[in-house]
Length: 333
Image (tube, rainbow, N blue to C red):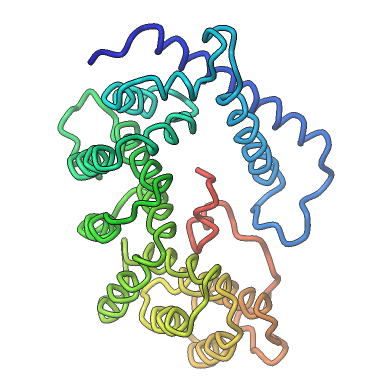
């Protein structure tokens, strides 16, 4: 089924309107907000402005997609999608994913999620399973992997909307089959994995515990981050112990340190203090700074810690370090 030019024009118009709303919100908050609120995770004032502007834009555009539009004959965009057969909605989903600057309309995600459940599940399974997850798997040199992968993300968003998490293990297994993945791939599966916490927690813990001897590098680092994010909302002794084991085993301990700080269990304080004391002569400066900041965040006392560099001051993470820890998944790309 070929999508009509009318639908393409409608999508293009909404994409432009949403871009204008975002620009307006950024200007509005830049003028009206004087400082970043205490406790904000934003790495900078500019990022903070972008975050709140994005949130307000999502609220405004959601309303836009559900309000009657004279140019749509008095129907809302959601009603236009609801009137389409599923096959056409799937085509619109893929077109939106690779074409629109603002991505797939939320109303389209909701409309597909409320269609025939079995058919939608089969469609999402096909797209997720058959699409490229790395540059090397994309067999069309005229296409960009970063763009084409948005189809997978869109289908994961549909499954989240449906609260359908039967593919969590398959998604994690596929993700773990690569030595490295793009950050936006990790971000997209994170939303699905964290959303299906009841299913994903035992899978994540099992993979992490089984990979301790390997140093938990590459995609395994992302699984530690996902588990920590789930644990922030649903803490458990099992999750803490797995994060503690990951700290001891990870080659790049900065990931584990920030995850433990975000998780919030103060038992991690003596764990980090002991590590610093044992590695006074070899600890990396960045890791030392991160541990000191984590200890402070967890309410620990750093006055009894010897600073091997003699210049510790608590600083915000640099932009290039935002990758580390649950904060990497706050929607900033």
